[in-house]
Length: 208
Image (cartoon, rainbow, N blue to C red; front, side, top):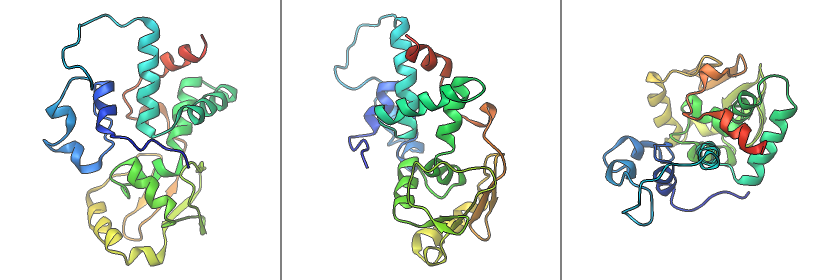
């Protein structure tokens, strides 16, 4: 599976905001955005006004890096969103939110999407009783997601069981904290997605 393996803090600095790619570290003073709020590379950069293409590109890169997706796969998501009914930008966000690794992150089983992706790849979860270890798997309304019984006994998930007590899932997910299970009760709407991106600029970029 192709994925970005470089230093992720550089990605946040390049986009000029926290993308929360490193779990707990992003909430501490060690966060690179707190220590180095400027873009990576040459420190003293001349301030300049970004042109229209630059703004569109930055929004696309911001969204792609937030969900940890490479360019070719992101393009396929956009093409699929174009063919769906409704607003293309919102369709794109919905497809990304419905990725299995993102759902695990939203439920609080992973501190970051990268950690959630690793847990999925290691086969700790089932969907409707069947093991699924594909991070890009698209969950559907009515799907029941559970932590495997054997995984519940691991130190990792015992710690998560305590951490989930103060966790609230998004409105489109129903979390059973006691049994470490969840159900997809609805499709995510735009107001449920807290990613700070202007998706219409991405649509304009691919429409050039």
